[in-house]
Image 1 (cartoon, one colour):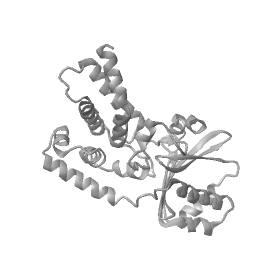
Image 2: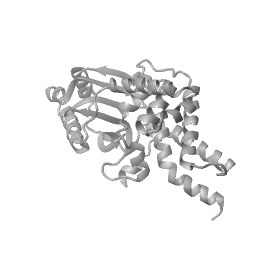
Image 3: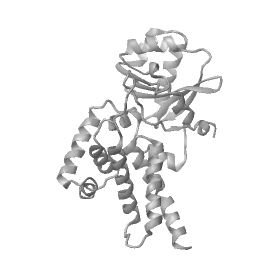
Image 4: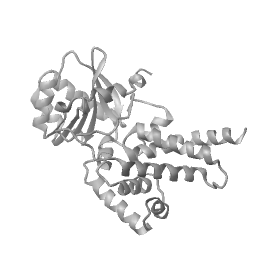
Length: 294
């Protein structure tokens, strides 16, 4: 085995870890893939000479690439509803492949990714690397050109924002599924009281229509308003395909075989505390739903 083959093999061993880290930093599966590919290009160009810890070297490179990507992002011109959901990670319920498991490990639910999107680039990197991947502050400090004490402070501030971001999801996905099923059953039979009962009184629903459907974007707060919306948009012809969305119970809604919505649910305390619905046709078309048939 020559050096190129050896490097390629070692890199593939690291890929799930690198992609899961990049996704947490960027909230975009596509950009995470780009960051990981950038690291491979750099490694392939420089070779392994002088690299004592390949895993650590790759982690540093991907982290710095992600930081540059975060800093280069221009402020999004949000639609009237001010809604932009991160990329959704869709998978079937039950066992899945190792890369998907790595991507979704540590309860990286959609609600958490949305909170991470509100952090500054340095806060996000420090929090992800320290609290999710156990990197020491002195290593993080070199990536963000700050002192270890400053890196610790950034992480603490980010951690506080994450804690304030909402409740943690119930851990049992099967129990989550029962609550989600009850929500759709009540919507289809037009049972307003049952809908309100399954929703947390302070539940929040976010709908992302993207550039293609800005009129559909909205943020709806409160159980009664969400229940009214659910009854209004219940479609008898719609097919509900159960899925794991960012590790939690979710649903892909299709009409005549075409996806019209991808929905993620935050179930906490046996009730729905959050609903995130992607209805942007361009982003829906980019989802790989073949995993649901595997």
